[in-house]
Length: 332
Image 1 (cartoon, one colour):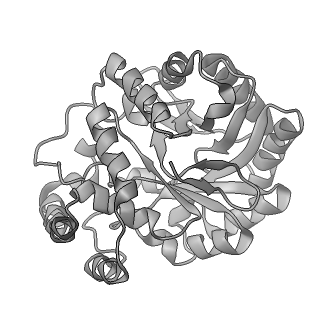
Image 2 (image 1 turned 30 degrees about the vertical axis):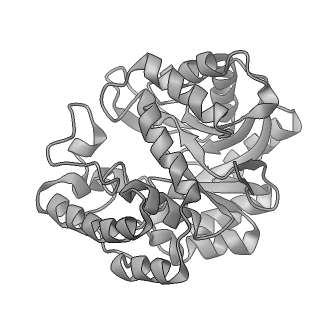
């Protein structure tokens, strides 16, 4: 497994990370046994970066990971944890809390559920509009000094917020959506990260399965985020699935799958970018790992960039009511 270093101050991690969210939430039912087997397979294959959030399944995901990593060498993997999202008993989201006291409270519960003494990368899931980012990062910095957190990350924030946070404490990485059909970070967010020496962990590299080559109409189950996602709705879905056919042509040339080409494209955008794959099953994980062997030529990269220009996707990446919480969607 190749390694990549997250920014100037961050850890060295596997060139591919495993996003565990779907094993507990948002994409319909998941099989617990298969989820744990998938985490085991990822670790055995050399994946060291496991990404979660304390609100995924309201703690279920952290407990699942705890079970999966039991008995493993703690130095053999890194845990990336998001915090701050508030939920009600029905599973709805009620806001975000980035207050310093809340930060320390969230961390205490995560350490307990995960059964570990430290978190490798700790990050607010979204910007709390009522709390200056300096206060939130300052609180995590105190946890770094106390040994409970190794590195500080950010998630879905703007270039301006990145700069402000980085002045308080070095930021290891920004977690943000990045794929062939979600290229918004290229305008100012990615250049800012590179200027400051901040890595990027890219989620949504397959756009939640939309450009995986496996998605079909009416595929989304009940309680699946994609059932309300603009990109998976009506005419938008037709237009977006048509884009996938362009990927198939390149994939056919390489003897690779559509998903492998999509992942390889993200990985090829820079050694400072680590794609996160949200595999919930071992077969999907095996397919994703195959992307590491896909080497796109300059001509193929140019073809893909031309076929998938920024803003090519039909529909927003989140419903409108969710976009108001995305500081990353605000342009400086």
